[in-house]
Length: 419
Image (cartoon, rainbow, N blue to C red; front, side):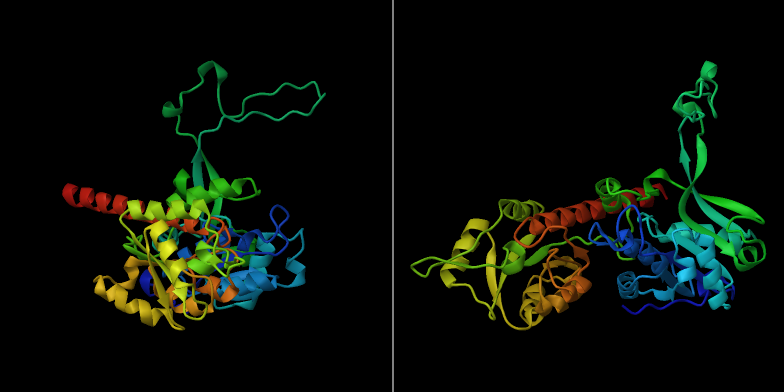
């Protein structure tokens, strides 16, 4: 997508501010972790979306040594710092890479190192932290999170040593509500003036301040076992873009390749049959209970028998519509007839002819086995393949977005009443 950056207009100064996400290809914990799909989009896409939408930065970069990470980063609107072999070693530090980036980009005055593994980052976090530098004169600002953990001294096995408390008195053990806890680095982001990095080799130093991030926004993924937990956190607290969560009223879903695996079985008598997963039919019922009209699509390029379409329609309680080579043209009329706009529509497709619909729909998804062209157009990439739970997964995502929108509306009403 094209990204317009603001040349510092929103911060009232002419310093060049760059966001830099470090994404080396050689992750030891989870292979290619930075581009693994999390809640429908590549992990790195979450922080890139927050950085771009904050409109704080004159440039947004991903520093990488890997071709696939570069491709994903470019598709998310980032520029690429192709790091050298010298700073791509296992022993290389973040500071080494940032110093190389600054040498190659002398126009940068302030760099914000954003950690790719912080998918609950929001633009407001970045805006409020940067203000500490641009308005209050700090040299560096980093993210912290408050933890209520009692810490004890580590001792080696068979050493004969006894452990001791590091941050509490066991004789006066405080209750959680009576203790403010401790501030720990969250690793989410680090804003630093160029001079501090170049002259002192520091990311945190000079006149330094912290920015406290609430615990629900502090997610850091280090091992694969964290992934399901992080995914649920992101679905609840992640940043989904400038536009509020969509309230879907109409959904279009391809039968072939989405609701089914894309296979048609032929009986000895020549009768056509398809297999539909009960998880996916349950997904359709979820949407119908939420007041969403679900329409199933077949293609004139690969038509169903009329009798088969009628059976699918009767069993699932959905209208089945045959669309042509340009599905958008056929569906536009239906959207207008219902006095809706495309932002009120969800679309699930799985191939090149679906790209236009995937782009314009308020919410769109593809199964995990869809081709790359379709994946790049979709707003959500399912972890399940077509015919094996992808429809159910997308239905749950739509339901969550509807509930988030309802919650946001209720909060807006409370704020309006209180004001």
